Image 1 (cartoon, rainbow, N blue to C red):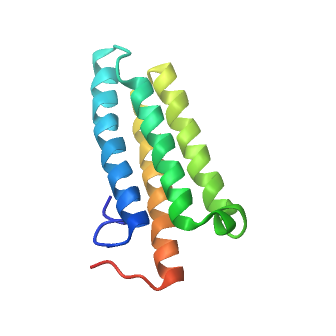
Image 2 (spheres, rainbow, N blue to C red):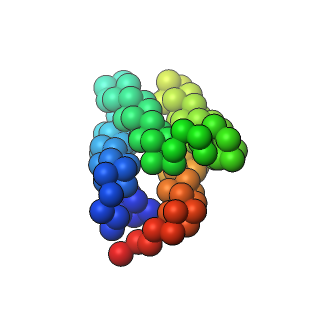
Length: 121
């Protein structure tokens, strides 16, 4: 959320909004994992997918599929890892995977900002 914060363009706001929704869903999912129940797990998977799509839109499809493909794969792999951890109910794997996903998305946002000459205010 902080990587997309402070920008005033629509794409940055969309990424930030989707990140906030994913953050709330992650907290709910974490509670579900700790409690041993299954509620809220699919909501997180859906919110992460929405955030990944918003990140793609922010980065631009041409870059995302071209020069940014290594970043695209990192985001997709981290998203898959979270999905696996959620399905297995593995809290430790979930925590590690979520950190990787967060870092992958933040790296894309910062890279795009640097490429476009945008600064965080």
